[in-house]
Length: 76
Image 1 (tube, rainbow, N blue to C red):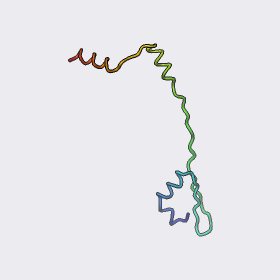
Image 2: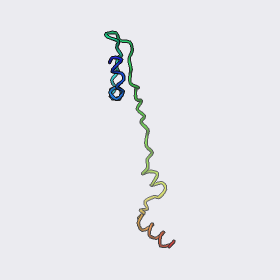
Image 3: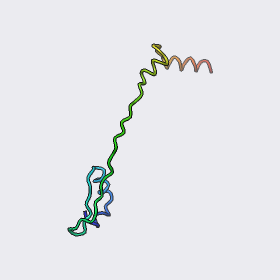
Image 4: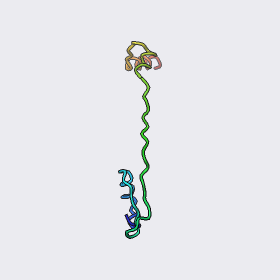
């Protein structure tokens, strides 16, 4: 990529997002490189929601609609 093509930032961003490094040239002389940032994968362990649910509520099954209607009839 020469210095004039450097003005096309959309193309430049697309190449960097694709992981391509770019050489800046003045005629045939490489004067610099633009290298994409390395992505560090951040794998987080998800909590065991099912175990938490069992710990809090046991084997009880809740019907959300019935609970909502009971609560609503109690207030209105």
